[in-house]
Length: 240
Ligand code: GLN
Image (cartoon, rainbow, N blue to C red; front, side, top):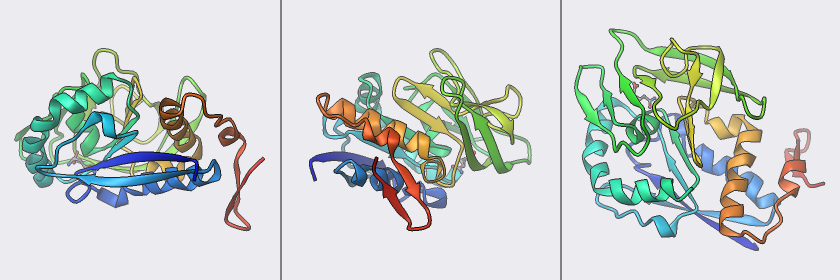
C-alpha cells in the first residue's frame, strides 16, 4: 500500500454503540481502492492521546453510565484533543461522543456529565423520552442526503462556529426543535446517526477519507475517489 492513515478509536471499549467502529471499516473499504490502508489504535482510559500521531479520530456513542466514566478521563485529554480539532484533524463523533466534545450532557437521571468544550454545543436531557428511529437529513453545502438511525435521550443545541451536518427531513435530529442534525466544525463531524453513518452514506465516507488523505499527503492525487462506485452485483469497488 502506498498510503497509510493512523486512526484513533477513542474509548472504543466503552463507547461503541451499534458497532460505531464500522465507520472506520467503511473508510478502509474505500481507502483500499486508492491504495491506502488504515491502522486503528484503541485509545481508552489512561492512554495518552498524541495529536501528531493520528490522521483520523472516531469517538462513538455510549450509555450514560459509560459516559460518566469516560467524562473523567476525557478531561486529561482535553488539551491534545482540542489541539487536534483546532489544527483541522479529521474527526467523527457519534451520539455520546458528539455530546462529549461539547460543554456538557445532562444525563437521563439529571446528572451533569462534563464534556471538553472543544466545540461550543451543550446537551440537555428529555423528560422520560428518547428520540428513536430512522432519520434522513440533507447537507446544505453539497445537497447530499444522509440516512441513519438515532437513539438518544440528549437534546443538543449548537453554538458558536458550528453548522449542522444536515437539516432534518425525517426524524428528530439534535433536539427535535430547530431541524438541525449533527455538526460540522473545521474538519470535525458530529452526528446522532448510528448505522454506522459512513457504512450507509458513501459520499460522506469518501469526503472524510479524502480530507484525511489530503491532509497527510498534500501531493497525493485522490481524485479517483470521487469516481469510484460500487458494483453491488459483485460486491466490489469499481475504479474508473
Ligand atoms: N447516552 C446518550 C443519550 O442517551 C448517548 C446515546 C448514544 O450514544 N446512543 O443521549
